[in-house]
Length: 254
Image (cartoon, rainbow, N blue to C red; front, side, top):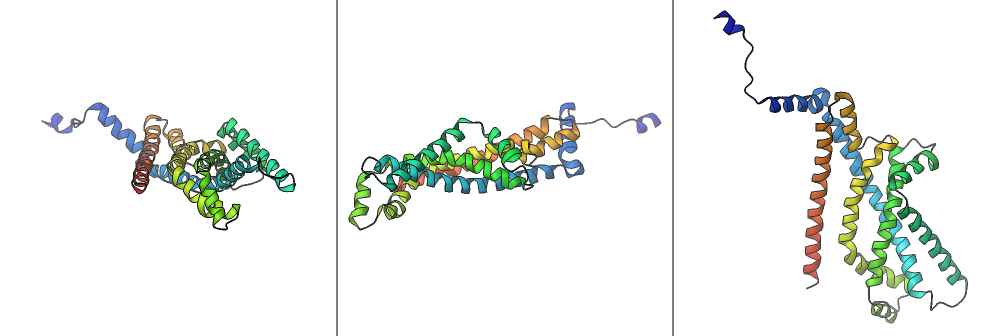
């Protein structure tokens, strides 16, 4: 009777489930380690948001230069304007070639360890690196949208007394944005995943948060699985928004 009272209680859970429960507590509950993931997620979203804004700004400028050159260079008279347009187009093409031809992780490390080696603002460096990288891809997306607009739209703007810049601002760019908005949204989704390399320069992003947990618990499965699951949820959420956006754009054209 005494032996039965002092015997160790029998665990009702299967061993693998009990081990999983212990690992979950160790990786996320103990010492509030889940906060590493939350802080990393917040940093990832901030970097992505500001990088998207910078990328769109650079992309619009580069797209306008490229499309203006392609549409008007043959009709322009020799002079300073033609020379400046050629130089600007050459610089933009160099920018696109270099950025799209080199890995983003290398660009991030060059930006952090060489260009801004004296800076202590890691987030700013990451935003600049990812924004400049995204701008090269956004430029080609927007340029394709501008080139898809019929030349009659330019002529309509001129007939209304608008100059080239006004025609681009009020007529061409809004239509081009509408055409390429789903592609720009997809670029935003891609950029979210690209920020996972921010840990290379010591930024506590989502992926780095998982690495910190793994380094303290020596249990790689749950931290890495949690990071992957969070990225998946974010991508699925924004992909759903993109699909809704595309459907509304199609309906508005009817």
